[in-house]
Image (cartoon, rainbow, N blue to C red; front, side, top):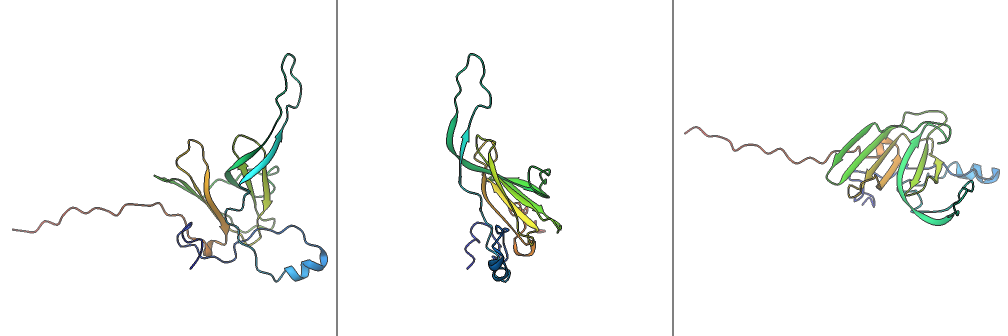
Length: 179
């Protein structure tokens, strides 16, 4: 049984991947034949951040802060996030449980990046996705005023189930029988 089927119904697990950090030359050849590791809910759950006031303000005392901030959001870019605009979801819909997004990512030589954002801070982390990634999905928790990711995944579209709005079955009126 697919361990992710409870998270993403219809998900077939294989070839979900992130780009690995550069390997030493000797290890690079051995790693090229290794299977890619899964990319599901890969953002760190907490991000340690040190926030400081950049410039003193006359008459005020600085309140610098160091804390861990919770993961809140995911975004995708056609290059490093500081150099490219965020990609808008291809599909987006709401249900009682929250917002659901999907991104079709056409193949491109330079690939794509994922950025993880955290609550109450502008600090975040990002990494390049593996070259085979062409589809990502995210489910947001509907219990919060702001978007908070419940789960997300990226991989090859043929291996990830497309998002489907949960619909109630159509209720048909009772059939009328001639008397």
